[in-house]
Length: 253
Image: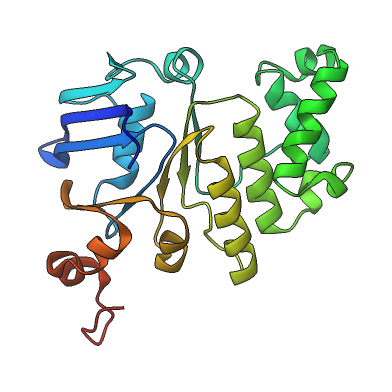
């Protein structure tokens, strides 16, 4: 386990019309680790990510990022001033632009298309774009339109766009959703390459994928932390098996 705590969530809660979507959550995410959040549908996973990124404001509690409370701050402030990047479940790329141009506009700061085209392609910029495209294994697809890519490739492209913003913390919401087994494995290897230089929080349902990437797993249930530990520890936890990991025959996976 890494020693430095990057994100310290303390007694975090949010309610919507009396419904406790997140209730008294305490989670620590260590610098450079891959921290996976799992749980049944409606457990509060996406709401928790919305709280971290400022999309939702908490009812109570703290979100300490590098020791500073970012709870309730605006999403733009959290993204730009605190270097937190988020990829949502569905790929969100510019379909009418090439793979190369998608990375370029992300590197330019997502301001406007016109400003992105005015962005100077210096040698350093070109090298950074190549580095990202090599990492996401799309360099040979750089001149293709994003709309022509396979689903997995589009997901990797958006991960590349997040990387281009140089976030310290990257939040990935079900990055392997809808992928083939081969694409899922390649995505897991990509995520592991990002760890260290980046800290990652990953929401995921695919337990094989979780086992492939996770250093720490937190299980949410009904808005609360049910368990926290390594994949093996969580997998063996009777409460987790009872509420989440049993198949329809009542057998653990």
